[in-house]
Image (tube, rainbow, N blue to C red; front, side):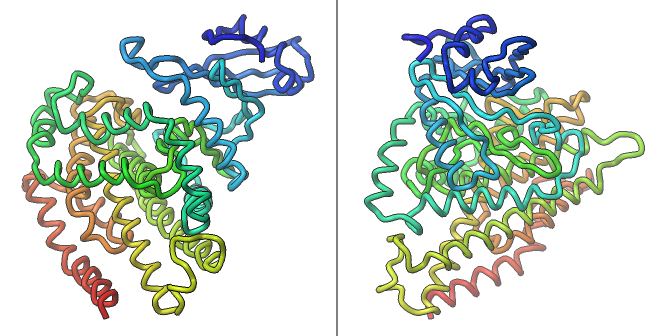
Length: 454
């Protein structure tokens, strides 16, 4: 241990720390000639340093005792670094292809040393703003989510093993409380932390606070978030927590990790892709209307869920007679019953995904900590127009998520909402869209209901 008590590191003290820490100094072969240190933390909570030497490289991430984007007026436990390190190690063991390796963890200093994801890796959100296609994104993210969520659930583990794991992560209380506040509470009430593109969205923010059905539905999601210890989730799986190249996808920053509902992770990722979709009109330029790129985003949304569903159920089938105690083989002992259980489980997970994704969208528009997808749109009126469409979609998707029985209808719905015209009020337009889709949605839902009750 380099220091006996916590202190925030700067570039000079970081060199001292590295020299005193063999697991880090060995990564650069104890060679400090030409050592370069750059602070790159653009997130809301932490310091992040890139350390590069001719002989090697790594990243240092240090948690601060407050929320960095707000300041010392909002204290925050440094213990989040412990839960991040544990989650990185556990998720990395399950899916090493898509999680950076941890080299060092210092609990006293709230500090993690890990693999440096060298260029051309960039934050996925920045790539989406730039209009870059990532052909393996859906494949890689579905792989990561299927493995990490399935293998930390009761579908794979015994109840004893699961409860012990849940107990360890129950300590990540403050970050769970932060999520509860900024995702499930603040957007639906007057809060000093809320903001939106004013005056354009003044009325829109007010309608969120006045929508009784929306509040009922978000309360149900909050209950699931707080009460359902389904799997070890990343807890903040937006497009800023993923680094990419055309061939590589790496999931970072799981400091919000805890045992919660699987749909919160899947929904966070898909919800942020939907935000990116609605932001594209604000990034379109002369000669590039981003139409083909929007089509790629829609395909990625659909492929992400479909591939996740395929891989998750394949893992379930592979391990159905294993140590998992959710559905004991002696009870669920025939193929027809197993199929019905699996269909019911996956449909609920799909609806959770849509609901949590919608809640994450809403909070990024009328709550705290907005997304660069919208914030980087310079023309305020265009930004507000993009945000209004996304907000309208989020509200309706949250309230009517159970009417969707297939991911294939979601891209259709997104396109229709994006294309509303001034001739029809946006609320009426969304209603018309749902009426158009409802015949198929309701039919699919009834079909599943009949199968479960035969």
